[in-house]
Length: 173
Image (cartoon, rainbow, N blue to C red; front, top):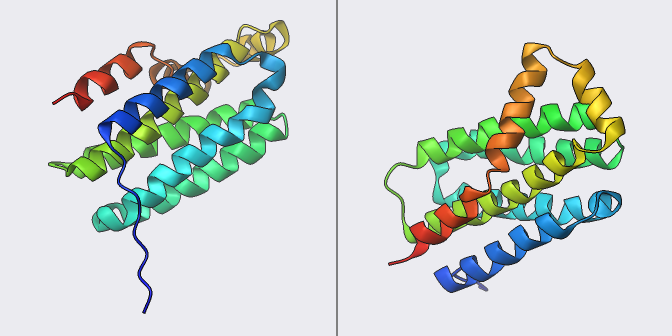
C-alpha cells in the first residue's frame, strides 16, 4: 500500500512564500489582476485543504470557505466586482471563524493558517487597489448600504499592511 506524505512547511518557507505573495500583491497592475487572482485563491484553497484533516471539528466551516473561495474567483474573473466583494467578505468571515476554532494549535496548523492569511492579504490588497480605479470607485460610492460597508471593512481588514509583519513576527522562535 502506498502512503502519501505532505511536505512540511517550515517557517523559512512561510516567510519566503509570504514575502513573495505580499510583494506580488503590491506590484500587480489593475489590468493584470484578473490573470493573477487565481494564484492567490488557489493558495487560500490549498491552505484550507491542508487544515481540513488537521482540524476535523472545523471541516464544515472549511468546506464552506473552499466553496466561497471558488465562487469568489469565478465572480472576480467574470468582472462582477460587487458579487466578488460580497463573496470575499464571506470568505474573510469564514477564515476568521476557522482561526477562532483552532485554539491551541500545532506548528503545522499555524503555518497553514499563516500561508492562507498571506494569500487573503494579497487578495485584499488587489481589491483595495482596484477601488482607486475611477469606474470601480464610482460603483463603490453608489453602494452605501450596511452590506457594502461591511464588505469595505473586510477588504481593509484583510489588506492590512501590518498583517505580513505580524505573521513574520509570530513565526520567529
